[in-house]
Length: 409
Image (cartoon, rainbow, N blue to C red; front, side, top):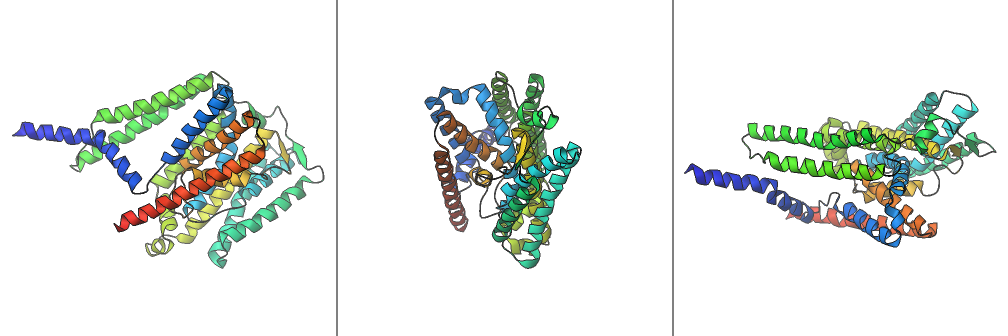
């Protein structure tokens, strides 16, 4: 009698690890929970198309330059993820980043401040601007669209004012800040070592989950499935790092970006604050009745957005080795917001991930790099990026409609 039960239990466990996982994924897609699937497919298509049109696209050093460029706007996009999750928007992130870069140049080069103090002042400015937006929203009910649009114009004017008639300040090329933004890459041993961490974390977290399920008398997926997933992830990361090391190597600035993504992802998924952010974005009134400090959540989202925007602007200045009137203008706002949405963060609030900024900005920078290699005009880049953003919003709207209808069904 026990043998058939053992075989049945074995089939259940196998189903949990392989067929069950696939069936669960298909069910989530049918219910409208697409996750990172659209952006993953988009990255594959973009890579294949541009590598066919110009093989230089996938050359290691071009990918290294792409990662350098991803970090600056990607960090700004992380802030956008925070405000989108609570169902709001910040249209001034580009101006905050531009003003922050101007502050670093004026205080560090113009006034002789220590560089770290100048950077700290820029970050405080970004957080203060976000706090002001939150108070306008919480206390006066001013829509974030209007307040941040006003802030965009005001901050742009302040940027032009403090830079003065010259309009540009060159940063010391030999400084650590500029080197960090342009040349510093990880030694191969360090990059490969860091590439082992995600697989190790997956194993530890998965084993803890298995133990908790076992204590609750629930079915426990076999350890082999967990080990296989961790091994595949580790092999993929090690292969990518090996390929980048054939060129200049993995940039430290991109490593900082990934670290911030991991920290924000932890905050959103493993803390009370993160659960509150999702709750407020999903249904503000229900969150208030549940005892959540809704005003405090809005404030934290806007302050984080402003601070990350200022950090992105500081790194942009280090990347360009200058603080200028053009910093934060152009397509910075477009790319930061588009990266978050293309990566999977909903414009309707309550759904998204810190990883959205990472994947979304890689898509945008890949398009930009590919078009540049083909010597096509910037007008095409704007049109294609706009089209990709429109498609992402359409997919999000359809997925949201599917989730609603699925829930009613």
